[in-house]
Amino acid sequence: MATLKLDKKKPAAAGKTAAAAPRAPLRGKGLSRPRQTLAQAQAERTERQQQRDAQREAQERERGGFDARGPGRGTAKPAAKRAGTGPGKPTSSFKTEGPGPARRADPGARSGKAGAFQTGEAYARPAGPKRAPARPASPQPRFERAPARRDDLPYADAPRPPRPAPTPRTNPTEGERLSKRMSDLGLASRREADDWIAAGWVRVDGRVAEIGERVGPAARIEVDPAARHEQAQRVTILINKPIGYVSGQAEDGYEPAAALIKAATRWKDDPAETRFNPAQLRGLAPAGRLDIDSTGLLVLTQDGRIAKALIGDDSRVEKEYLVRVEYLGQAGHPMEHLPAESLALLNHGLELDGVTLKPAKVSWQNEDQLRFVLREGRKRQIRRMCELVGLKVVGLKRVRIGRVNLGHLPLGQWRYLAPWERFD
Image 1 (cartoon, helix red, strand yellow):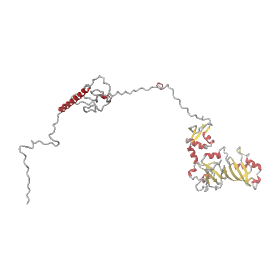
Image 2: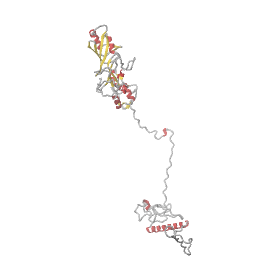
Image 3: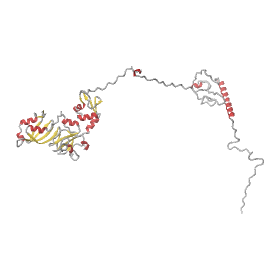
Image 4: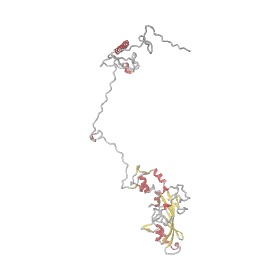
């Protein structure tokens, strides 16, 4: 069986106790330095400062410097010297006030080599306490009372600069309406011109025109390109109107000719490449009429210029018709019974509603059909003219307007006016 032996603790040395033995410091070597009292620290600091001051005064005396106390109040400062021109490096001085440490006059000086980084006046400045420069007194704001009247202002009597001369405007009672002038110049119809003026697209002598404005003969009229672009997007449609349709708005239960304008009724041989859009039906208006019993070429347009050219008071566009007639009270072919004098009256000399008609071109096409070429379009004009010479119209067809012919357009169908086609 194993036996364990425990070592007993050795007894402490004789004559020494735990309380009497000095304890070694935790850090460093030897005993720690006893802490000074406040009075001892101040005395030691004052002594060191006096030693530094004595050393600095000795150095200044050796260099022929100034009094360590510095100039007093009221003493003029010596002229400033440029850096590097003095006999030695500039120094800074300290002054002890009381038992506390002296303030450093130069924040850059910490040893005997004071002022080593100073420039300018610091080289020639004598040693002594350094004062912060006094701030210049800021001027107090002055509040002046505003003059009670405009006449009291200093510039009240000064001549005013001349005002720019206003753009001359035509007297509202003089000249003619701008829309009429634009219509006469062929720029647009009157209604179209009013729309452009309202949109700000028209300028007169460089300024924007106004609705109802009148202009003189020398006025310079300008149209915005936007108006031209909008005008170019407008369409004109040609219809071969059948009997039973009215030219304009629906009346007496009859449909308007515009009801024929559909994608399904467009002529398959239409030379124009314009794509049909139902929105194009808005703003279409007939440029010339055809009676409900008449057939042939009917023009519907959104372009006011075309409407004015075809139905304006000064229009010179020809309209050609083929008219089948009967001679009243006579059997047989009317060509055999109509006197030459009556045919001459159809060409020129007849009156309707007390107004002499413009000269026309009327001739026989065959034994019962006349060819009419007119430059005006009064209501039922051809029928009334024929009645005045003893003829009755039994059939009327318009085949041409200006330089645009009906051609082979089938009855009840329509097509666009091609870009290269013109009526006048």
